[in-house]
Image (cartoon, rainbow, N blue to C red; front, side, top):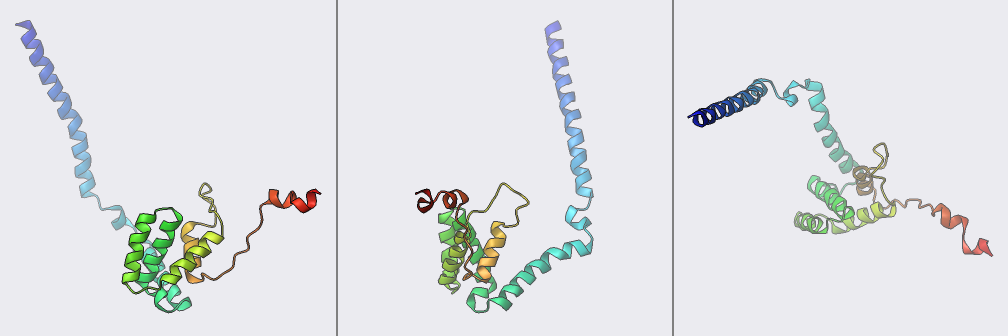
Length: 166
């Protein structure tokens, strides 16, 4: 008889613990549902800063580049293709390139922009303060893909060149 009452007591205690543990989380959910979202709490000035930046970016590309490569859909898809190619995601890049071609965008512009990105060398991804980011480089190369970057030779190779060693 005693073992049955112990089982019942343990069961009741377990249910009570579960109820107590479940209540604070449900109270948090209710409290979060009643609070305004973080995006709604932002002042109108801060929320409006992001959208004009993109609009200005598209307007800048339109103003500087002109032609079909400056169309918003070509610009957006082209930047994605170049970034995906840089990150070795070839399957996704080729799917985006199919869409790029379907919109009538110039395929040669993707090629010259990617060449520009590659010729500028590696991007230091470990340094968060590095000024050269992939997104910035792709944007610069999309706007002006024919810039010829100055590629400095590696310091070790320049110091021990074969002509100086003899």
